[in-house]
Amino acid sequence: MSEIDLAVAISDGNVLQTPDLIVYDTFDKMNLSESIMRGIYAYGFERPSDIQTKAIVPIKEGRDVLAQARSGTGKTATFCIGSLSRVNPEIKKPQVLVLVHVRELALQIKTVATSLSEYMGISCYCATGGTPLRDDLKAIEKGAQFIVGTPGRIYDLMNRKALSRDHIKVLVLDEADQMLEDRFKEQIMCILQMGFPKDCQIALFSATMPEAVVDVAKNLLQNPVRILVPPEQVTLEGITQYYVPLEREEWKYDVLCDLYKQLTINQALIYVNKRQKAEMLYEKMTAEGFPLSFIHGEMDPEERSRRMREFRQGTVRIMISTDLLARGIDIQQISLVINYELPIQRENYIHRIGRSGRFGRKGFAINLVSKDEENVLREIETHYSTKILVLPNDLATLAP
Image (cartoon, rainbow, N blue to C red; front, side, top):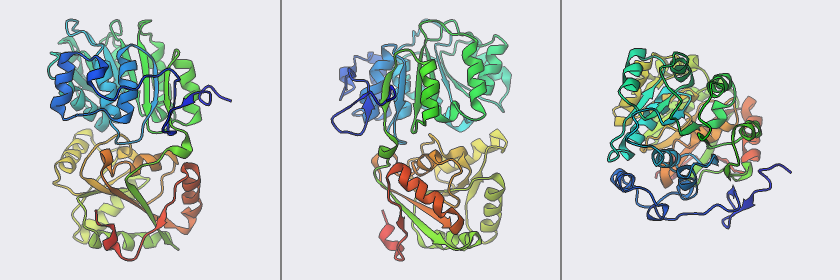
Protein backbone atom coordinates (compact mmCIF):
# COMPACT_ATOMS: atom_id res chain seq x y z
CA MET A 1 0.00 0.00 0.00
CA SER A 2 1.39 3.42 -0.97
CA GLU A 3 1.75 6.45 1.27
CA ILE A 4 -1.24 8.00 -0.46
CA ASP A 5 -3.38 4.92 0.17
CA LEU A 6 -2.63 5.28 3.87
CA ALA A 7 -4.27 8.70 3.97
CA VAL A 8 -7.59 8.93 5.75
CA ALA A 9 -10.84 9.59 3.91
CA ILE A 10 -12.86 12.53 5.15
CA SER A 11 -16.56 12.29 5.83
CA ASP A 12 -17.79 13.02 2.29
CA GLY A 13 -15.75 10.09 1.01
CA ASN A 14 -14.45 11.99 -2.02
CA VAL A 15 -11.02 13.20 -0.92
CA LEU A 16 -8.10 11.34 0.60
CA GLN A 17 -6.24 13.78 2.80
CA THR A 18 -3.76 14.13 5.61
CA PRO A 19 -5.42 12.83 8.81
CA ASP A 20 -4.88 15.93 10.98
CA LEU A 21 -5.93 18.47 8.35
CA ILE A 22 -8.30 21.15 9.64
CA VAL A 23 -11.10 22.35 7.35
CA TYR A 24 -11.90 26.08 7.50
CA ASP A 25 -15.42 26.74 6.22
CA THR A 26 -15.11 30.56 6.14
CA PHE A 27 -12.32 32.94 5.17
CA ASP A 28 -12.69 34.70 8.53
CA LYS A 29 -11.54 31.57 10.35
CA MET A 30 -8.28 31.39 8.37
CA ASN A 31 -6.64 34.26 10.27
CA LEU A 32 -5.70 36.06 7.06
CA SER A 33 -4.41 39.63 7.07
CA GLU A 34 -6.89 42.47 6.72
CA SER A 35 -5.38 43.50 3.37
CA ILE A 36 -5.80 40.00 1.91
CA MET A 37 -9.34 39.74 3.29
CA ARG A 38 -10.21 43.00 1.54
CA GLY A 39 -8.80 41.60 -1.70
CA ILE A 40 -10.77 38.36 -1.33
CA TYR A 41 -14.10 40.11 -0.84
CA ALA A 42 -13.37 42.72 -3.50
CA TYR A 43 -12.69 39.86 -5.92
CA GLY A 44 -16.20 38.56 -5.25
CA PHE A 45 -15.56 35.55 -3.02
CA GLU A 46 -18.06 35.05 -0.20
CA ARG A 47 -17.28 31.54 1.04
CA PRO A 48 -14.27 29.32 0.32
CA SER A 49 -14.63 26.43 -2.12
CA ASP A 50 -13.86 22.88 -1.02
CA ILE A 51 -10.18 23.00 -1.99
CA GLN A 52 -9.84 26.47 -0.45
CA THR A 53 -11.16 25.24 2.92
CA LYS A 54 -8.37 22.63 3.01
CA ALA A 55 -5.30 24.09 1.31
CA ILE A 56 -5.09 27.86 1.94
CA VAL A 57 -4.05 27.62 5.60
CA PRO A 58 -1.37 24.91 5.14
CA ILE A 59 0.26 27.08 2.46
CA LYS A 60 -0.07 30.16 4.67
CA GLU A 61 1.65 28.22 7.46
CA GLY A 62 4.58 27.19 5.26
CA ARG A 63 3.70 23.52 4.73
CA ASP A 64 4.49 21.61 1.54
CA VAL A 65 1.25 20.69 -0.23
CA LEU A 66 0.22 18.03 -2.75
CA ALA A 67 -3.29 19.03 -3.78
CA GLN A 68 -5.71 17.69 -6.33
CA ALA A 69 -8.83 19.66 -7.17
CA ARG A 70 -11.29 19.43 -10.02
CA SER A 71 -11.16 22.10 -12.70
CA GLY A 72 -13.21 25.18 -11.91
CA THR A 73 -13.13 24.79 -8.12
CA GLY A 74 -10.99 27.77 -7.18
CA LYS A 75 -7.58 26.11 -7.39
CA THR A 76 -5.77 29.23 -8.62
CA ALA A 77 -7.17 31.47 -5.88
CA THR A 78 -6.21 28.79 -3.34
CA PHE A 79 -2.48 28.97 -3.95
CA CYS A 80 -2.59 32.71 -4.64
CA ILE A 81 -4.23 33.50 -1.28
CA GLY A 82 -2.02 31.07 0.61
CA SER A 83 1.25 32.25 -0.94
CA LEU A 84 0.38 35.96 -0.82
CA SER A 85 -0.04 35.50 2.94
CA ARG A 86 3.69 34.75 3.12
CA VAL A 87 4.83 37.85 1.22
CA ASN A 88 6.49 40.65 3.17
CA PRO A 89 5.55 43.89 1.35
CA GLU A 90 8.64 45.61 2.76
CA ILE A 91 11.04 43.26 0.95
CA LYS A 92 11.22 44.25 -2.72
CA LYS A 93 12.52 40.89 -3.90
CA PRO A 94 10.87 37.80 -5.48
CA GLN A 95 9.16 35.85 -2.66
CA VAL A 96 6.64 33.69 -4.53
CA LEU A 97 7.41 31.80 -7.74
CA VAL A 98 4.60 30.05 -9.65
CA LEU A 99 5.53 27.81 -12.59
CA VAL A 100 2.99 26.91 -15.29
CA HIS A 101 3.26 25.32 -18.72
CA VAL A 102 1.65 27.92 -21.01
CA ARG A 103 1.66 31.70 -21.30
CA GLU A 104 -2.14 32.02 -21.24
CA LEU A 105 -2.38 30.33 -17.85
CA ALA A 106 0.50 32.42 -16.50
CA LEU A 107 -1.26 35.64 -17.52
CA GLN A 108 -4.50 34.46 -15.93
CA ILE A 109 -2.80 33.61 -12.62
CA LYS A 110 -0.99 36.96 -12.60
CA THR A 111 -4.34 38.71 -13.05
CA VAL A 112 -5.89 36.79 -10.14
CA ALA A 113 -2.88 37.45 -7.88
CA THR A 114 -2.89 41.15 -8.75
CA SER A 115 -6.58 41.46 -7.86
CA LEU A 116 -6.26 39.53 -4.60
CA SER A 117 -3.21 41.57 -3.53
CA GLU A 118 -4.73 44.93 -4.47
CA TYR A 119 -4.60 46.22 -0.88
CA MET A 120 -1.22 44.69 0.04
CA GLY A 121 1.00 47.15 -1.80
CA ILE A 122 3.01 44.46 -3.57
CA SER A 123 4.01 43.86 -7.19
CA CYS A 124 2.97 40.82 -9.26
CA TYR A 125 4.61 40.00 -12.59
CA CYS A 126 4.30 37.47 -15.43
CA ALA A 127 7.49 36.24 -17.17
CA THR A 128 7.07 34.02 -20.23
CA GLY A 129 8.80 33.28 -23.50
CA GLY A 130 7.94 35.26 -26.60
CA THR A 131 8.14 38.60 -24.78
CA PRO A 132 11.11 41.01 -24.46
CA LEU A 133 13.57 39.84 -21.81
CA ARG A 134 14.33 43.46 -20.94
CA ASP A 135 10.76 43.86 -19.61
CA ASP A 136 11.36 40.98 -17.19
CA LEU A 137 14.69 42.40 -16.05
CA LYS A 138 13.13 45.81 -15.45
CA ALA A 139 10.18 44.38 -13.46
CA ILE A 140 12.45 42.29 -11.23
CA GLU A 141 14.80 45.24 -10.72
CA LYS A 142 11.81 47.38 -9.65
CA GLY A 143 10.90 44.83 -6.97
CA ALA A 144 8.39 42.25 -8.26
CA GLN A 145 7.49 40.00 -5.30
CA PHE A 146 5.01 37.53 -6.81
CA ILE A 147 6.29 36.08 -10.10
CA VAL A 148 4.48 33.61 -12.32
CA GLY A 149 6.11 32.23 -15.44
CA THR A 150 6.89 29.38 -17.78
CA PRO A 151 9.89 27.11 -17.03
CA GLY A 152 12.04 28.16 -20.01
CA ARG A 153 11.92 31.89 -19.27
CA ILE A 154 12.26 31.42 -15.50
CA TYR A 155 15.32 29.20 -15.99
CA ASP A 156 16.83 31.79 -18.31
CA LEU A 157 16.33 34.56 -15.75
CA MET A 158 17.85 32.44 -12.99
CA ASN A 159 20.75 31.37 -15.17
CA ARG A 160 21.50 35.04 -15.87
CA LYS A 161 21.35 35.64 -12.10
CA ALA A 162 18.63 38.22 -12.77
CA LEU A 163 16.03 36.38 -10.68
CA SER A 164 17.38 35.89 -7.17
CA ARG A 165 16.16 32.88 -5.20
CA ASP A 166 17.46 34.18 -1.87
CA HIS A 167 14.08 35.44 -0.63
CA ILE A 168 11.72 32.96 -2.29
CA LYS A 169 9.41 31.46 0.33
CA VAL A 170 6.89 29.64 -1.86
CA LEU A 171 7.38 27.63 -5.06
CA VAL A 172 4.13 26.56 -6.76
CA LEU A 173 3.85 24.10 -9.64
CA ASP A 174 0.39 24.41 -11.17
CA GLU A 175 -0.86 21.59 -13.41
CA ALA A 176 1.80 19.44 -11.75
CA ASP A 177 1.06 16.36 -13.85
CA GLN A 178 1.99 18.35 -16.95
CA MET A 179 4.97 20.05 -15.32
CA LEU A 180 6.57 16.86 -14.01
CA GLU A 181 6.14 14.83 -17.18
CA ASP A 182 7.12 15.11 -20.83
CA ARG A 183 9.20 18.06 -21.99
CA PHE A 184 8.82 20.19 -18.85
CA LYS A 185 10.26 17.77 -16.31
CA GLU A 186 13.90 18.38 -17.25
CA GLN A 187 13.42 22.16 -17.09
CA ILE A 188 11.73 21.92 -13.69
CA MET A 189 14.50 19.74 -12.31
CA CYS A 190 17.13 22.19 -13.60
CA ILE A 191 15.34 25.03 -11.80
CA LEU A 192 15.10 23.05 -8.57
CA GLN A 193 18.77 22.07 -8.72
CA MET A 194 19.76 25.73 -8.76
CA GLY A 195 18.89 25.77 -5.08
CA PHE A 196 16.25 27.53 -2.97
CA PRO A 197 16.29 28.66 0.67
CA LYS A 198 15.88 25.81 3.16
CA ASP A 199 12.58 27.20 4.40
CA CYS A 200 11.11 27.49 0.88
CA GLN A 201 7.93 25.44 0.68
CA ILE A 202 6.70 23.64 -2.45
CA ALA A 203 3.05 23.30 -3.46
CA LEU A 204 1.94 21.04 -6.32
CA PHE A 205 -1.57 21.59 -7.71
CA SER A 206 -3.40 19.73 -10.46
CA ALA A 207 -6.77 18.32 -11.43
CA THR A 208 -5.22 14.87 -11.95
CA MET A 209 -2.36 13.13 -10.16
CA PRO A 210 -0.97 10.14 -12.08
CA GLU A 211 1.15 7.71 -10.08
CA ALA A 212 4.31 8.93 -11.80
CA VAL A 213 3.71 12.44 -10.46
CA VAL A 214 3.08 11.18 -6.93
CA ASP A 215 6.42 9.34 -7.10
CA VAL A 216 8.26 12.51 -8.12
CA ALA A 217 6.42 14.50 -5.45
CA LYS A 218 7.71 12.13 -2.77
CA ASN A 219 11.25 13.22 -3.61
CA LEU A 220 10.39 16.94 -3.78
CA LEU A 221 8.10 17.48 -0.81
CA GLN A 222 8.84 17.33 2.90
CA ASN A 223 6.01 15.89 5.02
CA PRO A 224 3.37 17.38 2.69
CA VAL A 225 -0.28 17.99 3.37
CA ARG A 226 -2.03 15.60 0.97
CA ILE A 227 -5.38 16.39 -0.60
CA LEU A 228 -6.01 13.74 -3.25
CA VAL A 229 -8.94 12.32 -5.17
CA PRO A 230 -8.75 8.64 -6.27
CA PRO A 231 -9.01 8.25 -10.10
CA GLU A 232 -12.43 6.62 -9.88
CA GLN A 233 -13.73 9.64 -7.96
CA VAL A 234 -12.39 12.34 -10.28
CA THR A 235 -15.64 13.58 -11.74
CA LEU A 236 -17.01 16.86 -12.99
CA GLU A 237 -20.31 17.59 -11.31
CA GLY A 238 -22.64 19.71 -13.39
CA ILE A 239 -21.17 18.59 -16.72
CA THR A 240 -23.26 16.17 -18.78
CA GLN A 241 -21.20 14.05 -21.17
CA TYR A 242 -22.38 12.74 -24.54
CA TYR A 243 -20.85 11.07 -27.55
CA VAL A 244 -21.78 10.69 -31.21
CA PRO A 245 -20.77 7.27 -32.61
CA LEU A 246 -19.51 7.52 -36.20
CA GLU A 247 -18.38 4.82 -38.58
CA ARG A 248 -15.79 7.00 -40.25
CA GLU A 249 -13.50 9.85 -39.16
CA GLU A 250 -14.41 12.01 -42.16
CA TRP A 251 -18.06 12.14 -41.06
CA LYS A 252 -17.12 14.24 -38.05
CA TYR A 253 -17.01 17.50 -39.97
CA ASP A 254 -20.63 17.34 -41.11
CA VAL A 255 -21.77 16.41 -37.60
CA LEU A 256 -19.82 19.34 -36.15
CA CYS A 257 -21.46 21.75 -38.58
CA ASP A 258 -24.90 20.35 -37.73
CA LEU A 259 -24.23 20.82 -34.01
CA TYR A 260 -23.09 24.37 -34.62
CA LYS A 261 -26.34 25.17 -36.46
CA GLN A 262 -28.69 23.48 -34.00
CA LEU A 263 -27.30 24.35 -30.57
CA THR A 264 -27.82 27.68 -28.83
CA ILE A 265 -24.77 28.30 -26.68
CA ASN A 266 -22.94 31.15 -24.97
CA GLN A 267 -19.41 30.09 -25.85
CA ALA A 268 -17.83 26.79 -26.85
CA LEU A 269 -14.45 25.14 -27.27
CA ILE A 270 -13.72 22.58 -29.99
CA TYR A 271 -10.70 20.40 -29.20
CA VAL A 272 -8.39 18.69 -31.68
CA ASN A 273 -5.03 17.00 -31.14
CA LYS A 274 -2.83 18.69 -33.74
CA ARG A 275 -2.20 22.20 -35.05
CA GLN A 276 -2.84 21.06 -38.62
CA LYS A 277 -6.33 19.81 -37.72
CA ALA A 278 -7.15 23.09 -35.96
CA GLU A 279 -6.13 25.09 -39.02
CA MET A 280 -8.01 22.76 -41.38
CA LEU A 281 -11.24 23.01 -39.38
CA TYR A 282 -10.94 26.77 -39.12
CA GLU A 283 -10.40 27.20 -42.87
CA LYS A 284 -13.28 24.89 -43.83
CA MET A 285 -15.77 26.35 -41.36
CA THR A 286 -14.95 30.01 -42.04
CA ALA A 287 -15.26 29.29 -45.78
CA GLU A 288 -18.83 28.17 -45.07
CA GLY A 289 -19.60 31.30 -43.08
CA PHE A 290 -19.19 30.06 -39.51
CA PRO A 291 -17.75 32.84 -37.28
CA LEU A 292 -15.04 31.34 -35.07
CA SER A 293 -11.35 31.45 -34.23
CA PHE A 294 -8.54 29.00 -33.47
CA ILE A 295 -5.45 28.83 -31.28
CA HIS A 296 -2.47 26.51 -30.83
CA GLY A 297 0.90 26.44 -29.09
CA GLU A 298 3.00 27.25 -32.15
CA MET A 299 1.21 30.54 -32.77
CA ASP A 300 3.01 33.84 -32.14
CA PRO A 301 2.48 34.77 -28.44
CA GLU A 302 1.05 38.19 -29.25
CA GLU A 303 -1.43 36.68 -31.71
CA ARG A 304 -2.41 34.05 -29.14
CA SER A 305 -3.00 36.78 -26.57
CA ARG A 306 -5.14 38.77 -29.01
CA ARG A 307 -7.31 35.76 -29.83
CA MET A 308 -7.67 34.82 -26.16
CA ARG A 309 -8.69 38.40 -25.36
CA GLU A 310 -11.38 38.29 -28.07
CA PHE A 311 -12.65 34.97 -26.72
CA ARG A 312 -12.75 36.22 -23.13
CA GLN A 313 -14.60 39.36 -24.16
CA GLY A 314 -17.15 37.35 -26.12
CA THR A 315 -16.25 38.90 -29.47
CA VAL A 316 -15.52 35.33 -30.57
CA ARG A 317 -17.98 32.70 -29.36
CA ILE A 318 -16.39 29.53 -30.74
CA MET A 319 -12.72 28.63 -30.38
CA ILE A 320 -10.92 25.67 -31.97
CA SER A 321 -7.96 24.65 -29.84
CA THR A 322 -5.31 22.04 -29.25
CA ASP A 323 -4.66 20.99 -25.64
CA LEU A 324 -3.03 24.39 -25.13
CA LEU A 325 -6.35 25.50 -23.59
CA ALA A 326 -7.17 22.22 -21.88
CA ARG A 327 -5.81 23.21 -18.49
CA GLY A 328 -6.60 25.92 -16.02
CA ILE A 329 -8.07 28.51 -18.39
CA ASP A 330 -11.17 30.02 -16.81
CA ILE A 331 -13.72 31.59 -19.16
CA GLN A 332 -17.00 31.61 -17.30
CA GLN A 333 -19.37 31.73 -20.27
CA ILE A 334 -18.18 28.44 -21.80
CA SER A 335 -21.16 26.07 -21.66
CA LEU A 336 -20.11 23.50 -24.26
CA VAL A 337 -16.94 21.56 -25.05
CA ILE A 338 -16.74 19.44 -28.21
CA ASN A 339 -13.98 16.87 -28.54
CA TYR A 340 -13.58 16.63 -32.30
CA GLU A 341 -10.87 14.10 -31.45
CA LEU A 342 -10.49 12.29 -28.14
CA PRO A 343 -7.27 13.36 -26.37
CA ILE A 344 -4.07 11.38 -26.82
CA GLN A 345 -3.42 11.54 -23.06
CA ARG A 346 -6.34 10.16 -21.08
CA GLU A 347 -5.91 12.71 -18.26
CA ASN A 348 -6.54 15.56 -20.69
CA TYR A 349 -10.15 14.43 -21.09
CA ILE A 350 -10.95 15.72 -17.61
CA HIS A 351 -8.99 18.91 -18.23
CA ARG A 352 -10.75 19.56 -21.53
CA ILE A 353 -14.34 19.08 -20.45
CA GLY A 354 -13.61 21.01 -17.26
CA ARG A 355 -13.59 24.19 -19.35
CA SER A 356 -17.41 24.07 -19.27
CA GLY A 357 -19.51 24.15 -16.12
CA ARG A 358 -17.03 26.33 -14.24
CA PHE A 359 -17.71 26.97 -10.54
CA GLY A 360 -20.91 24.95 -10.33
CA ARG A 361 -22.58 26.16 -13.51
CA LYS A 362 -24.14 23.65 -15.88
CA GLY A 363 -22.17 22.51 -18.91
CA PHE A 364 -22.08 19.90 -21.65
CA ALA A 365 -19.37 17.88 -23.33
CA ILE A 366 -19.93 16.21 -26.71
CA ASN A 367 -17.41 13.70 -28.05
CA LEU A 368 -17.30 12.87 -31.76
CA VAL A 369 -16.12 9.26 -31.73
CA SER A 370 -15.08 7.31 -34.82
CA LYS A 371 -15.07 3.53 -34.80
CA ASP A 372 -11.30 3.58 -34.23
CA GLU A 373 -11.76 5.66 -31.06
CA GLU A 374 -14.43 3.55 -29.36
CA ASN A 375 -11.88 1.71 -27.22
CA VAL A 376 -10.40 5.02 -26.05
CA LEU A 377 -13.85 6.21 -24.99
CA ARG A 378 -14.47 3.01 -23.02
CA GLU A 379 -11.07 3.36 -21.32
CA ILE A 380 -12.01 6.89 -20.22
CA GLU A 381 -15.34 5.66 -18.85
CA THR A 382 -13.66 2.83 -16.95
CA HIS A 383 -10.79 4.90 -15.56
CA TYR A 384 -13.04 7.65 -14.21
CA SER A 385 -16.06 5.44 -13.44
CA THR A 386 -18.23 7.74 -15.50
CA LYS A 387 -20.99 7.19 -18.04
CA ILE A 388 -20.88 8.97 -21.38
CA LEU A 389 -24.30 8.89 -23.03
CA VAL A 390 -25.22 8.72 -26.70
CA LEU A 391 -26.24 12.19 -27.85
CA PRO A 392 -30.07 12.38 -28.11
CA ASN A 393 -31.68 13.21 -31.44
CA ASP A 394 -33.66 16.03 -29.87
CA LEU A 395 -30.92 18.57 -29.16
CA ALA A 396 -33.46 20.94 -27.60
CA THR A 397 -33.15 18.84 -24.44
CA LEU A 398 -29.57 20.11 -24.08
CA ALA A 399 -30.61 23.71 -23.53
CA PRO A 400 -29.15 25.02 -20.23
